[in-house]
Length: 184
Image 1 (cartoon, rainbow, N blue to C red):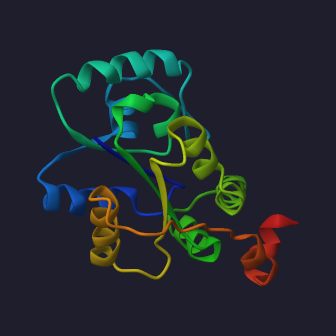
Image 2: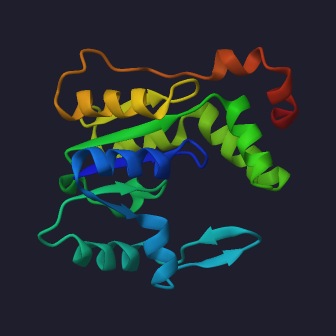
């Protein structure tokens, strides 16, 4: 199985849908599963999961004898290390994410939390800690079309990608006036 994770707005669902067509494998959306099985509640527009252990156990039953592309920002929290062959962390320039969050009508606190998380690479860090550096790959999706991203993922899956991206938005952030307002 392949995992795809990243901050909200990085394109996990879009990429997984196209990759699914390309590989002829179903997509398992962690957030959708959580919502459909009443394993979380919404508080102030955010999905709050009270019992990650329960989510992990319920998801385990879904995987018996099946292959999936698994997506969600909670991936490292609920999918065991041995379940995944490769994990792709989608990363995106914070200014682009900020525009996407505004289009989604996220409140200021949710925007700031997600932007800071992307800036410091929280999801990438959590993914490496859970699955290891050998299984974890970052892709900067900022200015790439879906086909190019899918091509990169296929290369990763087939062990044809020679080098790994190392994405660091801190220098980028110091030059963005738009972003500074969320960081002050």
